[in-house]
Length: 149
Image (cartoon, rainbow, N blue to C red; front, side, top):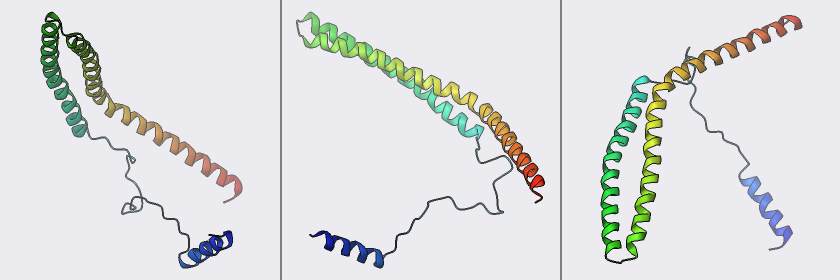
């Protein structure tokens, strides 16, 4: 394909379908604006459910993980005592399992604890944001007064 032919095809495509930009967005809320408390909403019931699920996951995983660790270490000891090199490898895997499961247990505890804190933090953020926006509106009105608007 020659360069001129490429340019001709591009021009033809542009004529057939003009370039358009479409932005994806949420539909505007009825009534012309957001709610009085801002866009960020945190529902304590939802946070509590997530925190409870994280806590339950932690409890169940801790129980199952302990069983898997003990079984793997017992199998590794048996294999080692019979002279199988696989016993050492399985022992290494069991040790890594302990480290990784502790990380997961710590993470689920962190999620559970953090969600207890989140609602209050977001309420404080909303107060700060509302104060900042209010300050900007006051500043804007002062500029408008000086311009004579």
